[in-house]
Length: 295
Image (tube, rainbow, N blue to C red; front, side, top):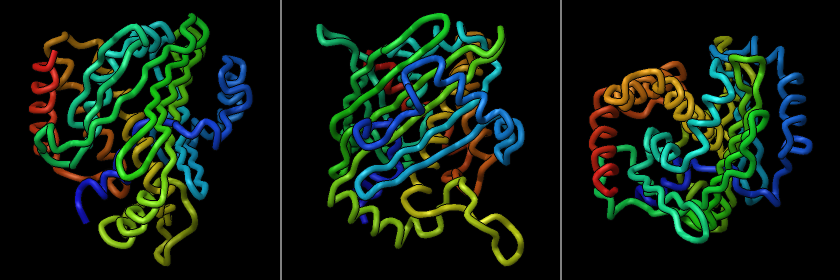
């Protein structure tokens, strides 16, 4: 099975199938997000994630979707200033283990993120798969933030990729965020997924508990929902690591992001472990230098 065939499962960038999945009630509104925060209050403070976080996933015959809801200790102004900028999204996306390159450009039609995705190891940029995301700041106010990244096409007959980021302030020092990621897949993607889950991905799991093993340990969801949950979490951790780096001197921010992202994935080794810390940081530093050289 080639790396490109496997890319379908590890690639995770967006909440795409808007026509297939419903958002939270009145999902574009600040009121709806505040209502979601209230509904999740208990689960945000009592969960196995070791942080104020809740994760949902959904699957249909042709679509996958993951949602992370989280309460972060950053003021709304900080979150909005950081994420209402397409170039900053490239700083976020490059942290994901499968992102090889990202460049933000703008023309008369608006801002575009040209992203290349590929293996979990070092790879020439020409061997990675290019995906073009339209960037749109749908709402930017002191009370509500909504950023959308949409791509029509992805690898292995996947389509309708979207990353949706919504945020509202909670008090003066916290922000409640929703990161939603989804895409559609066709016949080629379905067959590739079936092959992956029967071979390399046979022992991979997500985060949703579905029962208990004979030794009493949790049994987690696998299959396609496991795929979407792992990648939704990886992208959320990239956002959180980016925000956490902003209080460091600029010269130290990249290193802090890389260390933070990897340390966060180590909290969930059953789901997110792929390569060692040194291998990840060396690869990402090289990819970041390549990314910066393209500007």
